[in-house]
Length: 189
Image (cartoon, rainbow, N blue to C red):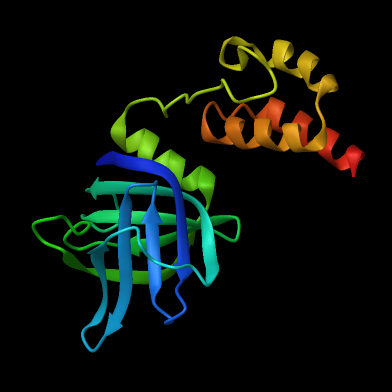
């Protein structure tokens, strides 16, 4: 069982005034998401599209699975949606400059964040990327123990607490600390 995390970051799916759907992965990968007679395809595109409305946005994970019973053996794109991640199967990967359009299979499957990370982490047999803590309200956050981090939470506003919580979910997943942040967020509302 192996999983290769090929890329992760922020994405936006938006609609143009002509009703075209555009998927942006990171800041550098632009695709038109087109429905046709043979199903849906992604077509490599340029960043010159006018945005009428945002359909959805959030985090994305591009993962290639091999011998994982929960996922087919091909690249998957997971798009954050409604508290989980929508599974999108890419039978031949993402479009490239040499092969500008590729078939895409959207599914109704929503994968929980913890489940997705568990599959990637256990299959890849490597730690989940720790990430960059420089934008957090607690300097040196990555080096803090649970006790040390809890002591620093008192000085944070709800938005800062939410950012710390999201970061903790994405990196170390320390349940005691997440529970403490949740408790503080409940009392601040």
